[in-house]
Every structure is written in structure tokens, then in C-alpha cells.
Length: 159
Image (cartoon, rainbow, N blue to C red):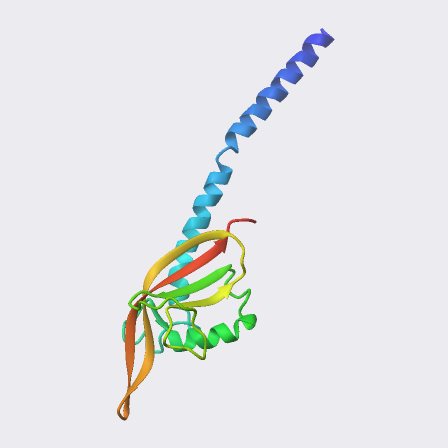
């Protein structure tokens, strides 16, 4: 009788372990899907963040507009924002330009790529098309010159 109770206990323990492993088998896939969804939402959030958005983004219905002047200055002061957004990398590509060099204060606006934040870690990249605007001077007046760009955000896939 004692042998039968021990055998039944072991049987139900094994069945319980099997049921738990089956129930938790999709957790990694669910986490990966949630991370991708978070990255997609974060791209839209960053393009409208006050630190990057165009000055009149909300008054003139300019959503998904990045002020490149702000972004270049932000790159120089990124240590203050390193953990602010919780991302591993922020890159802006100027799609309407044939240039591929990295933007700095010295060569801006004659560049094609601006890496605002880069930690070197691997992660999930998500991107969205945005307007890239900057102030230009023509004669005595200033105007907004806008180009097509791509905002790429990398979030960590480890946690």
C-alpha cells in the first residue's frame, strides 16, 4: 500500500511538471512579441517627444516631425538622456540625401546619418518614416526645410 501511495505521488508530480512546462512554453515568444510592440510604439512616441520634435509640431499638425537642429545638439549632450527613454539606440537616416556620413556639429547639414544614442548592445530595431526639418536662411528670412527621413529605435531584447 505504501508503495502505491509513493507511485501515485510521483505520477502526479510528473504530470504536474509536464502541465507547467506546457503552460509556460509560450512565454518567451510572448515576451518577444511584446518587446516588438513596445519598440513600435516607442518610435512614434520618440518622434513626437519635445526633445526631438519640430517646434510647432502640435500647433500646425506636424506629427512625426524631427527637428534635426535639436537632434544634433542632443547628440552632443546625450549623457543627460542616456537612460531617459530606456532604449539602446536612436538613429536618424536622411533618406532624401545620397550622403551616408555621420552627422556632427562640424559637418551638419551635409550628412546622411545621425546616431543620437548608441550603446553597442544588440536588440530589436524598429523604424518609422518621419519628416526631418531644419531652419534654413534664404536672403533675410528663415524657413523650415524638410526632408524625408527614417527614425530607427533599438530596444534591448534582454531583461
